[in-house]
Length: 193
Ligand code: URA
Image (cartoon, rainbow, N blue to C red; front, top):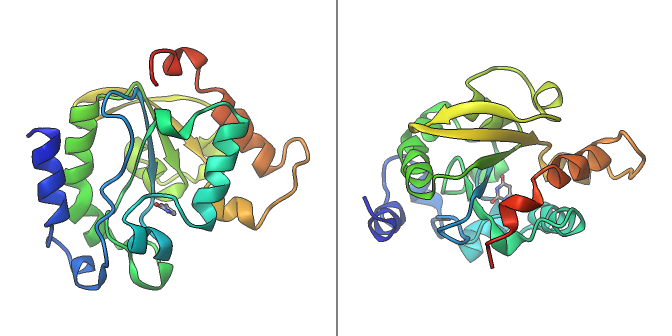
């Protein structure tokens, strides 16, 4: 499958009931040659309306932290575990995740990222095939194979959690997240516009 074929297929997807309530499919965005992929949980209200990932309150905080950590948002590819908004901002159901999994696998296969930053519990557990929580998973790189591609997974707290924990003190979630983001080596971004 090519990138364009993938995008057309995803935009027309009716594999799970979330297609009935979506305004837009959120395919994801970023350079197709990026070596870093950010994967969130799923679109919220603002993402559903705009068709773009991480543009709501959480997304604005994530973008701000990325900038502070010198990780240019334009240099990374950003997508989600599910591509249509779960109603009432609930977490995606297992059936919705499995219906959407093939699209994420195709994306990883085409992009072949070196690093996958998993944002929050849902993508972290999916990529690392674990029930462990983000607090114990974050803070280091994990080797994983996803869709046949060897990647380094770097789990980070979800920005919606950081919106509720805004202290900038050393060792608090926000500071730890900056540390995680800074760990994405500058080498990774060297050749990317
Ligand atoms: N916006 C997204 O695109 N994904 C999330 O997980 C949260 C907000």
